[in-house]
Image (cartoon, rainbow, N blue to C red; front, side, top):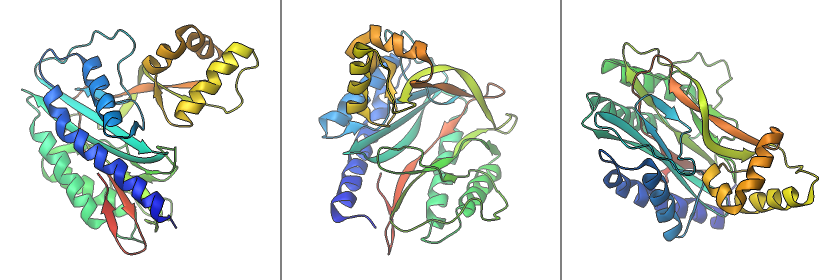
Amino acid sequence: MLSNDEVEKLLRAGKIVRAVRERAPALVFEGAKVSDICERVEEEIRRLGGEPAFPCNVGINNIGAHYTSPPDDTTLVPVGALVKIDLGAHIDGYVADSAITVSVDSEYEDMIRVADEALEKALQVVTIGGKISEVGSVVEKTIRSRGFRPISNLTGHQISRYTIHAGVSIPNVRAIDIGGWGRFEQWSVYAIEPFVTPLMAAGEVKNGPPGNILHIARLKGPKEAESRNFFDELYRRYKTLPFAKRWAAKIDGFRLAKLLEEKRTLYEYPVLVEATGKAIAQAEHTILTTDKEVIVTT
C-alpha cells in the first residue's frame, strides 16, 4: 500500500507531465532543432517543480524509442515527419511517464488518431485484478480495425520508485494468458503505450546505434578515486533512473568517457527502430491503481 505522501508525489509528477505534454507540440516544426525540443521539455519539467525521470525522447519517423540528443546534436525535424515526444517527471523518485506524436505534414497523420484511440480503449479495460493481457487484445484489435499494425515487441511497463521498467510488461498485441502477463495489482503504477505502424510494416523494432541515454548498470563503482567521485555524483543525481549523455558530459565529459570505456559500469540504450524502416506513432499514459479505483495520473 502507498502512503498519502507517496500518492501525492505520483499525482504531482503526473500533473507536471500533463502540463509539459500539452505545450510540447508547439516545439515541433520543420527545421526545429531536436536538441532544443529535448532541453526545453526537460527545463519545463524542472521549472514546474519536478525532475526529468529520463531524458526527453524525440523519435522521428521510424525511431520508436531511446533517442535523445547527444552533446552538440545538429539533427533537425524534417518536413513529412511523425515526431514522438516521450517525457517523464519524478518527485523524489515517484514517476509519471507519457508520450504524444506530432505530425509535420506527414502522410501517416491518421496513425496518431489510431494510437490515441487504442490508448483510450486500453485504459477503459484496466481494472484492479483484471488480466493485463486484455490490454494487448484491445490495443491490437483497435489498431488493426483501422488498417494499421501494432508494434509487437514494444510494450507498456510497470513503474516503481526510481525504476522506469519495473519488470511487468503491458502487451500491445493479443497474447495467450497462461499466467505470464499477470493481473493489475492494487497500489501499483503502470505505463500503457500503444505503438502504431502502417500495415505493410514488419510491426517490430530492432536495435539501432546507441541513443545517448545511459543508466548505472552496477552499483559497485570504479576503484580509481576521481572516477569513483564522478560515479558517486551520477548516482546522487539520478539513482537508478536513465540520464542523458549530454547531462553527464556537463558534469565531467572526460570522466564520462572513461566510465563508458569500462563497459560494465554504465549501460547505453540502443535506439529502437522499426525493422522495415516504416514510421511509428505512439501514445502513452501512466495509471495508478489504488484499492478502489484506477487513476490516470498523466
